[in-house]
Image (cartoon, rainbow, N blue to C red; front, side, top):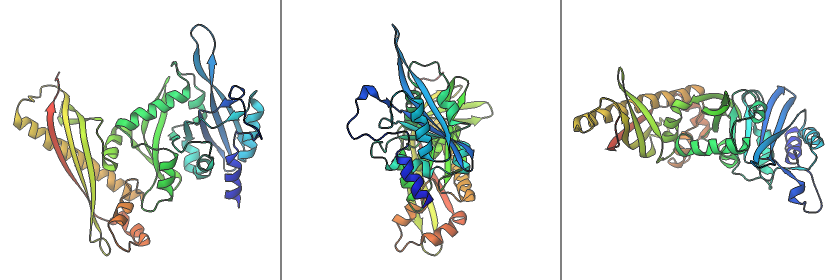
Length: 359
């Protein structure tokens, strides 16, 4: 009953009900919102709305409304009381969750309010914040765009190359689906910039661990097919090479799925060297040597990543869901007991097809 009440109240969060259509100029549209932990009974909610500054060089900046509350209804009432215009959520683009609230309270009840509101797109981006969401939204960044546009652009361009794309629809699908666990970007502020720290991993709706940004690309190509991204490989003691991903594809196969399941991941990657020093790239043997070292590097790191997931008893790669699709009469209860100990083998095929300019 309490969850239902919270959800219903959350739908009306920071919005007002009106019997007639409002005039757009008379509204303030939320572009980003954030939640932070206060204590076991309270959260701090913050919303960011764009404000166009007048003048010769007009810029769009952000205004923050924030409140602490025990319920979302109280939260919405306080925030509406701070604004000279009604606040609406129909243009929400990104929702942030402070790491503490994501870890201690979980985010489902807060996220469910977005998911159930027909005025809000299910394509809203999500991210966990290292520290406080309020502090990230409230900081004045030296950019021409609003903080919300900055956040959305940051997430979008990294989702093209280094992160699997996560929005409200994706997270809710992963949460309610069997044989998979959710994830989303992990952001942090460094000086006057926001950067992607990695991928936040969830058990149910609670944050429990993260993958650093250095390993985020590896997670992406193990999770889904990709045609973008760069990664560096150490070839020798003081010798590094930078490789552009031209295309990568991943397939999952299960054997002996009912009694004693064994699982294999097949990753194929085509790339080209875009930067390297003291590497004779015209030499065929040297290219084959690079392919071998890249294959070993990815395979070793990938196996360590998968083993870490098993140790944490989380399945962000959705291996259980993939096994289910290949298995008749699949028993999820048995799978959850077996998953931490199931042999999962990673097979990597690397092809360096061409090279670019070398420094």
